[in-house]
Picture 1 (cartoon, rainbow, N blue to C red):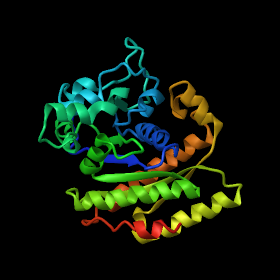
Picture 2: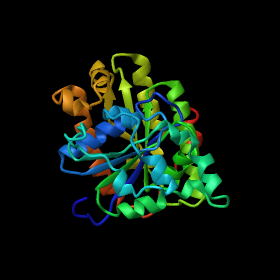
Picture 3: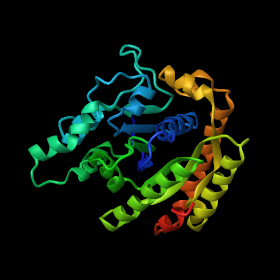
Picture 4: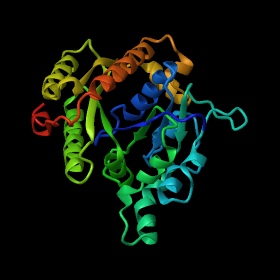
Length: 291
């Protein structure tokens, strides 16, 4: 697995609403960081297998289900670029894939472990991975499944993904409420790193209005509020997804690829700044509900 770093930053990415670019943002942020020499592992914790399909893999790999159950060492579940296996991932990006059987994870876990907590099952695998990666991204499902809650309970940082629309902001508020609940339930250090606004059409007044609403409602979180970089809507992303690749592999000079590069730089700068903050900032879930 290569030489270990001192630490791996654990970052959950999510939103309680589906279709808001969560997986696309995860894959492209990791790929943009890869261009900067940062090594990332993505763990697909969604039974819809978004990251797995998004990186061109079928859904017949052993992966997150087996790792969470303790049936497979996490290092053995990692998929890397391997011409012999027919896998081609972005530079410096690896994956622990998902299958549909993640839907059955909690039931299977409780069959085997009547009195254990399935939402703590990420702790040991992440400890075993140690500092192999700069970043470990937990791509969560848009529901409160056991793997999703496990991600919330284990992550150091949380990134929320949203569109600039009323329905997406409502889902954003649900996720913020969950973050507050997780802090009270045992992961007091979970911090909101930022909100990625994607699929933005800056030509429309309504999109611009919601961009400003999101920015203002999260201003209370200071530098840990909405990211300045906006990800605009582009059919190039859909073309890349159709090929099981990122824009960095299909159209690296596209303006949206440049936006993700800007987001990666902002992400790194924000982490550097946030590292100086000892206590998590409050998440203003109540105010966000009025957006």
